[in-house]
Image 1 (tube, rainbow, N blue to C red):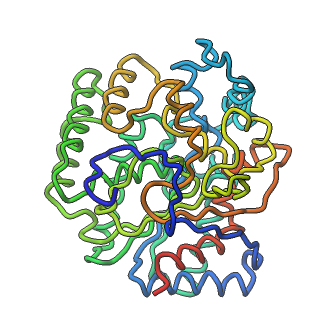
Image 2: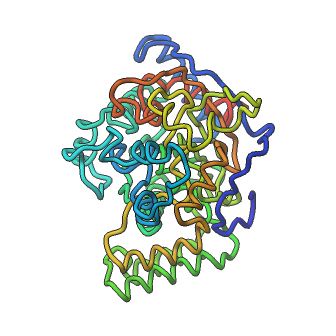
Image 3: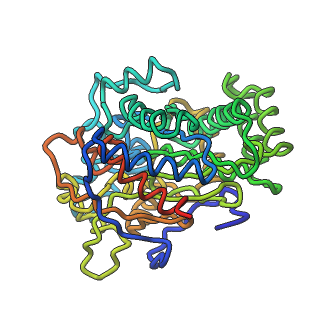
Length: 420
């Protein structure tokens, strides 16, 4: 889908991605803050700057929320309607998906929605540190290297998205992100062919796939329809996030102005499940990094280790990699709060995602697809095993944002994006 994607959903293909997929093995390397680590990070940052990168934005959300999106599965089926009958092991699997029984969430966690503000950053950092969270410690370590090696010529920022993970919530979050990026571009006076590198963890990557379709320069029928749906929702409910003046301003910005002043948006996702399709004509470079164990017995190492429903026994041991990325695909999401939200959510789903219902989720997840349809895919063997507390690893989803993996990831990014 390199052009004219028009908000279409990714395909769950089992075919070999060919040259688009690589299988690096994670190496711990130098300890954080050591001379060797600083030198390695400095080399990566220097390469970015020489390639035109003017800013780096790190995006993440609340990793202790319903990461698997089991709320939607229960709304449309699951155990409530008996769809588990005749599928051995599905009850155990669904128990591992639900936040009240999978060991990830608890009653004392930071509540939704989140705001991109220092007070929310602090609360989240205290709760989760750098597990599935681009923490202030992570940002400061990166910023410190920029200050010492690049003399502050690269702007670094942290972005916390609301983490309201359903179609309506993501649509509203994308509008907020669009405003944030456009304000940043104005402040830095981006020039054509300069670059902004955005790194997004988990479900935050879904915002960028939607954004890639929104910022395409050609006419887009579904872009217009999406704004009409959001406007109609405001008319029915008075939702202050979707007031007509704001929607009109953003739509005009998308259709009458050049996104980021002509600068290129390079995107890296970490453990983002395969869902929305990417419109690559609207962005620069695209890379997906996934925690993966290429150990299938049939030689198809680009697919998930084991298919449903037998994977319930292996998830706590992390023997297949990132199970959030594998299982939180089409058909999953957070629960909705009202019938009005359900109505508009369904309208947005008709634009973005043709898959809904418990059986459709089973159909999608059984494909075992790891790689998005577009961009380069790094299926990384992090060589980690299960730990006693799921909150420390998020079933393979929590390693990407840890400070100790920073040098490895940026070496990979530079190799794929900025090596020339």
